Length: 94
Image (cartoon, one colour):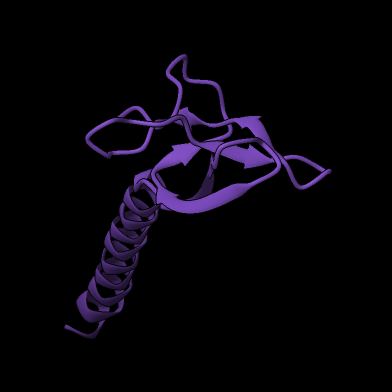
């Protein structure tokens, strides 16, 4: 009986630890895949006069330009080193 307990308890503990590690890893992967709202800028009316907007966009080129969700969409930009909103942002593809 004691021998069985000495064998089964470590195996049971290892199995539970493995299941916990796998479920934690899945949660981290799902969290990393969630889109993130960032601050982008629209030109108002020139690149040196920017208004900030919260958008779900990325600086990584996905082939689709980031646009606002207004009735008349406007392109959303990032700021450059000169503090002008003139760098492209791209739509996050799901």
